Length: 358
Image 1 (cartoon, helix red, strand yellow):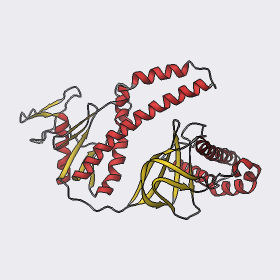
Image 2 (image 1 turned 30 degrees about the vertical axis):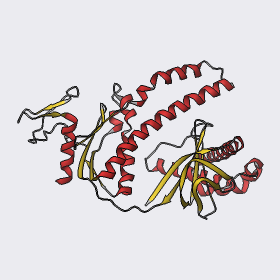
Image 3 (image 1 turned 45 degrees about the vertical axis):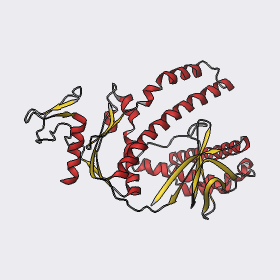
Image 4 (image 1 turned 135 degrees about the vertical axis):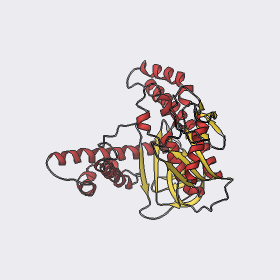
């Protein structure tokens, strides 16, 4: 199967400057393509990425000598147009909004390749096409990849690539498990195991507010404002990494030890409309949990069952099957039919696990 890996680069000042130049060229190309696309569309034409790429390479690119500077990989402009075409494809298929112009310092990234040749990677150092040798903070698997994407978060640069890896399915300790996701407890399993919600954003909210106030008081376009901006971005990145680490631990445990995993199909966008719980729900990362679960299921050889969005897992008694309404403030399910009493999250998880046996 195809796996991807992302790790932090260990760069010196000249290498970091070279990465910034590549990201700037990719951003310029993307913005030029979007502006030209909009202009042609207003004139009644139907542009596409191939037409823009041909015109840019033949008529526009020769005028900008800084794009052909020594050490600059020329593949980044091609991938910029590919990204623009993918953005419009998502827009026309109603999977995303209309493409917007990229801003310096916001999601800086670029993609390079070796003109169709495989790029060898492995260990703590690797040779990038045209750019040269770079070091990583952690060892990489010895393999090859077709292309490499380099991105920046705060003041750190990261490298990401996809590679083929085979996995043999292992014997699981449990056949079926139901997973009930929540706000108070991040995940409750039908086996009785509970993963608490660390609420990373709430835990670091005081420092975020303080760093935001410091940034707001700095003079615009000053070096002190830039330093304050980097400190705030680093703290946001730390919170995101802590949240992802928690989700990785839960999803890895589920896929390694269970043959079939049943999860509910949550309407996350609908849940976020509840302004009293929106911050806590967004901090849980339910969409990221589902994404990790899907690709790890292929990696570890287990099956994912998505319960119907309208399946009453919380309202149904796991003992007799009686269905009754239960308010959100009540954390214990007390059945009015058989008198069965159980934690509401565990009750829902057991009901979900039975869907795989049905």
